[in-house]
Amino acid sequence: MIEAITQFFTQHPLLWAFVKAVVLASFTLVIPLAVIYVERKIAGFIQSRLGPLHVGPQGTFQTAADALKLLLKEDIVPEGADKRFFYLAPYIAFVSTVLCFMVLPFAPGWVALEMNVAVLFIIGVSLFNVVSILMAGWSSNNKYSLLGGLRAVAQLLSYEIPMVLSVLAVVFYTGSLSLTGIIEYQVKHGWNIWHPPIMIAALIYFICALAEINRTPFDLPEAESELVSGFNTEYSGMRFAFFFASEFANNFFITAFAAALFFGGWDGPVLPPIVWTFLKVFVMIFVFMWLRWTPPRLRIDQILRFAWQLLVPVSLANLLFAIALGVR
Amino acid sequence: MSPLETALLLFLTAITVLSALMVVAVRNLIHAGFWLLPFFLGVGGFYLILSLEFLFALQLLLYAGAVMVVVLFALMLTRDVMNPQIRQTNRLYVAAIAASASMMMLLIVLIYRHLGVLSVLPAPVDSDAITRRLGTMLLNEYVLPFELTSALLLSAMLGAIFLARNPRIEMEEESGE
Image (cartoon, rainbow over all chains, first blue to last red; front, top):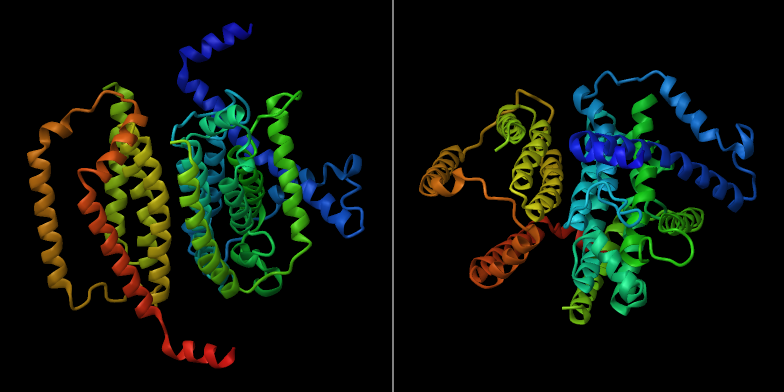
């Protein structure tokens, strides 16, 4: 039976690619349900309240119900909006997230597209997320949206640089641009996080990751108390849901990327590789959510100064350190 | 080439040419900035067909950022950016025409000379080897242009920082702190 299916798909590579694409897109839509539920429960735990409780056992269906509600809601487009760009922006955000998952290895062989420059591809594709934020902010024809969009671009582009430099440190250290290659190196030589230059790189990556997914203390693009809701103020219904889904899927992705770069990806004893990947991802997601309720929000100039005057020089120096100690 | 590849190539060409035309044809500056996106993606697609995955990834990485910067500049430096009646040219249009015409001539000459190379699609190659070769070439044979480019970019960046410095704000900050 399985052999017949395998044979069928090797004969029809286009169909196989289609199946993978559908699976990835659904995964990107479903994983936010889990992440949002976890977020609500952790927020409830930290604030000594219960979190969602009534819809389904322990409130597990709450997010699904929310998604259903958003699906049925009216899709309102502001009168003065730049319609075509307004329509397009959420889908660009979503597609960029799906493309990131495309090259991510979940377990040995569990990768939709094995790419030998996966790391570069991921960094490039994730930038399209920022493009979509700018697009949404501008096309909404709303000053809060525009300010949110501009802040987002300034912040995300600034933190992209130390992030890329810290990822490059891993690349130079392991001598591979392919995520599978990096993980296999770690399976042989131990996790990257235990090596001094990569330890610093991981710390920088962690700070930048917080900024990239707009989490406190870097949640300026959608600072509720200042900008209503930031770049997505004017969005409603399904389009809003797409922004929301891609943000939480990004949350998952950026930790999965960190797991692959620093924590050996699927590597771990006893449990099957796929379980290890998810375990590492959710531990890191827990840390992100924990942080959300800890530090206050910073000002935009403080955030940018921190990136350019501290993170960029440190990550550059660390890159040299990593090259000096690297494999070749 | 298989019919599928030909179709893909035609599709990419159509996207690239059309969006490039849109960039210069639309009257709204922000739209022009965003139209760069499909253009760069189309060019990236050509790299992918030639199995130059490294160049494709770099194309995504550099130009997605470039689009945003262009749009930002349009937003911040243009007065009345939404107005389609706004003048699309400035006093330097003669120089601009001369520069683009000479660039066009250069491209035509180059393409004509290397027509033989361009008309054959290379066989699928080991893209890791290409990436490695690219790196060694940049730091050996082409090290001088490479370094000159970086010096040019650095001086442009310094110039931009100098122009962006606002002495009044600087003074206020010093007195405030």
